[in-house]
Length: 445
Image: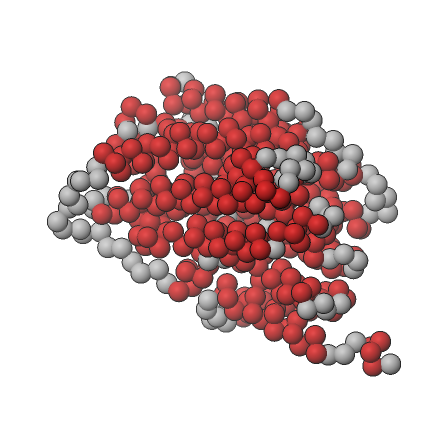
């Protein structure tokens, strides 16, 4: 076993140790497993938010986006900041809601609507979990060539699942702090030192690498966080877990700043390599190659930071998926609604098995991530609008089915609609507006 392999294994074990070190979360109720109501200070909330979203997309793909599209890479973190500002405006809606999940927030009474929202959120979270399974394989496989990539995915994912299952939200928040320290120490700090040391360096007079203008469809897709953040289950849980309003709001602001700083660092890496005519056969390898070239003695820094980022997103969305499955799907359909512990165990098994299957058949991190966000906002944004318009939940359920049906039809028939991230939510909103003006049967009578 070489030095890099040893460092990777030690890092993995440290995440597991910290995750299992905390007091076990009770799985006797969904709320105790999923949040720490009125207990978290601003720093824990900020690290949690930044680490949840600074996963495979932020580390392995933001650099590649910078390499291809230059500063367009900052559209995603900028959109996230705007989304968090919207959350701040709507802060009291999240805090005053007594539910646990986004489904609880958007559906108070209708069981069918609750299950439908639960299916959408669970599937979205599963795609994100699968994307990070793929990211783990891509990151670690080159350093363990003798081990089959599937075994690497299985081993690491099982370790992460173990501490999420036994520690719940408590484990996730504690490992967020460790992951934050590793990412800022091993990735952000070296990049900023490199920028300062090379600030006066002249760029090559001839840049053969061609940066592209990001297509409108991509711009809209990377702007999804504007809508995703206000509908994010993770944001919902962390606001409810804040000690008070001051800690909650500061945590949101600082979480956005932390995330933007990470994204800026890795975007710079991709842009720097493009400006210096470095050819990358796989742009998603920009970060490790940058560290190997400019920090050869500590090249493993990038690997550990990337590993921390992937696991930080992975554990958060494993938790989100488990609670969505158990609270929004299994619980409403179960005859015995009080067996939270059993439902959480069933949901854990489903999350693990389905996410692993998805990761086996789809190996594009960015595609999985963007697809998940597209599904999420296309269905939930119209539902949120319908709630604001005070449309009955029965009508919202019908409108959501129509919306999903239209989207499926468009995809099956391969109609060319662009940008989908804008058109699909608008289709749903249009359906809800039509249902708003159609009188209900009770009014007709």
